[in-house]
Length: 113
Image 1: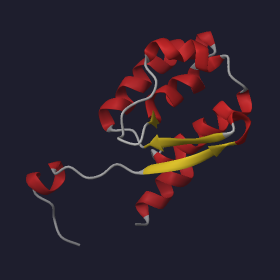
Image 2 (image 1 turned 90 degrees about the vertical axis):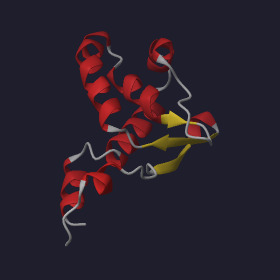
Image 3 (image 1 turned 180 degrees about the vertical axis):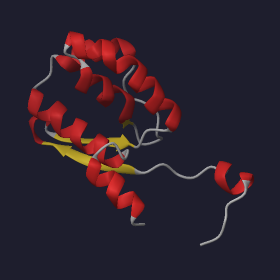
């Protein structure tokens, strides 16, 4: 395996995306892996959202995107997302965590690439 230089490391790479079927919403959404900056921002906000019961909807708001990769939701959408059915929000939450390397399994898989 070759050593990477600064240019190799910093070059822009396409972010992973996944289309997820959400049966209760009668459709599909696109999720996108988080960048390091988004993950840091999520982590910063997450502690306060644990207290309000909006932790899962916070992550969903960061990662659901349109066909061009633009975020669909903003911070003001977290509360309305938290009022949606738990099954659908949890489905997206789980898929986003896996796609963004936030699960133990994803971390192990990344080591074996």
